[in-house]
Amino acid sequence: MGSLPSFDDTTDFDNADRGFIDALVPAVVETADGRVVWDNDAYAFLAGDCPDTANPSLWRQAQLCARQGLYEVTEGVYQVRGLDLSNMTLVESDNGVIVIDPLISAECAAAALALYRKHRGERAVTGLIYTHSHGDHFGGARGVLPKGTDEGVPVLAPEGFLEHAVSENVYAGNAMTRRAMFMYGDRLDKSAEGQISAGLGMTTSTGTVTLIPPTLDITRTGQEETVDGVRIVFQLTPGTEAPAEMNFLFPDLRALCLAENATHNMHNILTLRGAVVRDSRIWARYLDDAVEFFGDDYDVAFASHHWPTWGRDNVVAFLTAQRDLYAYLHDQTLRMLNSGLTGAEIAEEMQLPPALEKSWHARGYYGSLSHNVKAIYQRYLGWFDGNPAHLWEHPPVEQAKRYVDLAGGADAALAKAHAYADAGDLRFAATVLDHVVFADPDNKHARNALADVYDRLGQGAENGTWRNFYLTGALELRQGPGTILLDMGGAEVAMALTVDMLIDSIAVRVDGPKAWEEDLTIDLVVTDEHRRHRLTLHNGALTHRATKADASVATPAGLTLTLTKPQLLGMLAGKGLDGISVDGDPELLRRLFAVLAEPDKSFAIVTP
Image 1 (tube, rainbow, N blue to C red):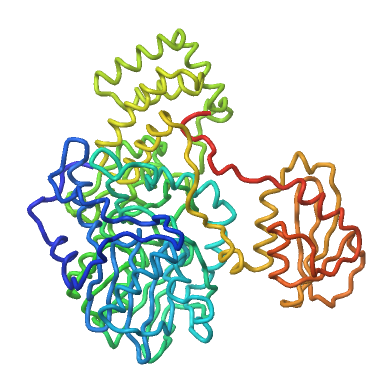
Image 2: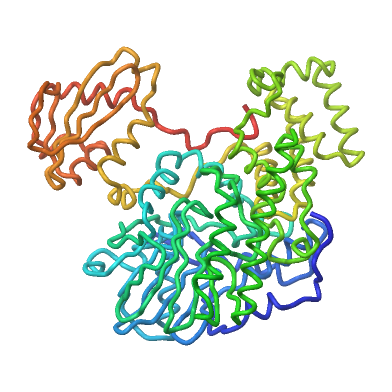
């Protein structure tokens, strides 16, 4: 992106500090056994001036996101910010408080609630709202509603929430979480040379991820619900920042929640950790609809990240600029796409209108102009750019070996890469060095040279997640892969899944070639949902269908297990068949388990 907005404009700092009540001191959250899962004090260095090792625009954003504590948004509405990647909002109700988006980790959510209660009294949680289906907006649920306290407490979410939460955080959870280590830089030192922000917030906490299933689905725009005396009017926004998402208004409090649809940065059309490509066209349309639908009925808008915007006219200006941002990205990408340009070419050509380019909230701190354009291209045309030369290319290692041979060997390629780096062409230096590393991952000279280039690329990046990717790539070239700390598929999340989802999560672990010759059927009669699930392993694919538990069965399964959902979870966790009714050959279960692969939690990314 080109010219920057004015650093003399302090509006964002004024708004980020407005309503401050108290901070958590120290701003450190630990598990019961003393493991630190959040440390906002580690960012104290941001109080200084921006050094040469950081982009000044990203440094400014980091200073804003690092603000931490309890804030009053308006009478009866409070936020705890800076205790996780996301915000937790608390709306006071007749008999307690309604919690919106309980962070990633139960420990952080509990600390945020305790900070609120310190100043507002021991109010019971009388409602829980998930704005959308990403883990940083539901994972801390048990921190605000521990087991035994949630009975009768309504849990509201947009239609499709559970399905999308599972597909993103469980089915592809291992790969996404491993890549998220790069995106959020959780292995990097918190320092002016290392991790300074993720743009959307500081980083992710690494505590206990939980999930309380919704009890009330929001299924239409205009739906109104009253939770413990508090009226709420909803706008469904599926396919925007998440597949299941919603904005909502508290009309009696004149406060509007924008979920994660409008934040103080350009968001992702496709997040670098991986996800379903978002629809920037419909995203812009829902932002426009919000301006019309909510009318003049609010005085402040807040979101699941960053700081609020006060004044209806200011909110409308913010929403319309955000609308124009996503609409412009979409329409200009399609215009150039239809002229024959590829995603990479469009990303080089694209430039925002001056009014957007000079808006702090449109800067690419989390999403970027470059990777968002490529995502829109991908949504419409997929990975293939139409050039036959790109249709059947060699995979990375084999391609790298040939490029290095073409350059005259590793030493010649290294010399060329150093020349490009010295000339300031870090992008191509990284490309050449990446080929050398993939051709020979034991070449320490190449690994160190690539790490040095990644350091320079990262420290110059305005985008927080690009910085974290580059610097984590450098770290792993020097030290090797790291291990995932955040478990998005833990026991609490598993308990929230439906039986169909649990079976699907098994199916994606089947080692197909290993299971080619297997042919078996297993029936799971789940008594607490009164359904029979027939699992068929055939041609390396595990498929299933469900019927009523007492439905007649034309062909008996080789094994029938009659069990409860908790017993199913225990069996999947390796606790055996104790207490489970068994009819048929239990050897079939052993054969099924024998072809299930365990995901590699430390798979290589910057090396083969």
